[in-house]
Image (tube, rainbow, N blue to C red; front, top):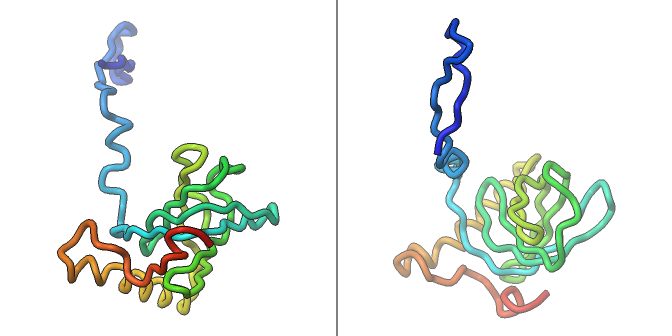
Amino acid sequence: MSASIKNKGSSDTGSFAAVPTQNITSNLHVGRRREPRQDVDSCVVIRLVSLAADVSGRIIDISHGGCRIRTDRPFPVGVFRRIEVDFCVGGLPFRFPGVTQAIYDPYNIGIRFIDLSERKREQLEQLLDEISEPERSQGGEGAPAAGLEENDRRGC
C-alpha cells in the first residue's frame, strides 16, 4: 500500500512521488521505551488532581519513567492530565505524581511520572530493585515480583 504525495521540487503539477505508508504507525513506538518495565500486580488508585476524583484499578507494570494501569471502569479523561498514583507493594504504600501519557483502550492507560522529588526517586529505585531481584536470581521471566503479599495480588 502506498500514498502519493506531491513532489514539491517538481515544476510538473502532475508529478507525485510514491511514499510507502505500510507499517509507518506500527514503527512509531519501536525503541521508545527508555527503561525496562517490571511486572507488578497490585491495587491502585489514580487521583485525578483537577477533578478531585479517584479511579481504582490494578497496576500492571512499572519502570523509572512510569507505569501501566488497568482500571476497573472506563477511564474518564484523556492524555496529559495531572494525576497521582497510590498503591502498595509488600505492605509499603507509594504515591507518585504523574500525567496520563497514553490511553490504550478505555481500561488501559499509561502514566508518566513527573516532578519526582529526590526522596520519591529513591523510593522508586528501591522498589524496582526489590521487584527485579527475584527475576535476576531465578533466571528471568516468569519469576514472581518481590514482596508481593497475597492482598497485593487479590484485593486492596
